[in-house]
Image 1 (cartoon, rainbow, N blue to C red):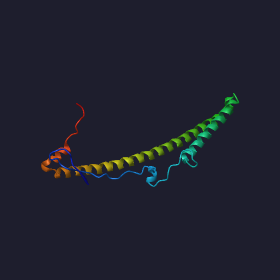
Image 2: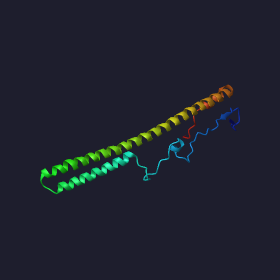
Image 3: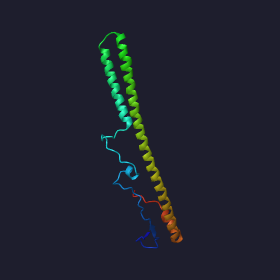
Length: 167
């Protein structure tokens, strides 16, 4: 530990400066790479879609196609008896396919959000651990400087409030 002395006249105590610890993550690498996980693929890259996205998108497309076919079949006749098969199969079936596809897409978003939340909570736990260690180091440093100061002068200096620049 390097010691720092004050340049002011008088019997000022000497306070040791804590040495900085190197706990920084390498900023050149992605945070997922640092944890040993595969790098995320850029959006639109081949194979970058999750199965929920692929199946959900296909179901929405098929549902829209079934609805369009049902509409075309219904539009060709004015007789409600001839329109009912198109409405019941294409209309309701298409709506069900669209609903199932949207459910899969929302499920994918939920999984992705949960993973992002898990990453954030891991980062918060790491920061809390570092802050607790820093707090222990500061308390150790303050008690060591208070013990080394003559007549308790270090305790008063360690506890003295910051001076405000306000008049």
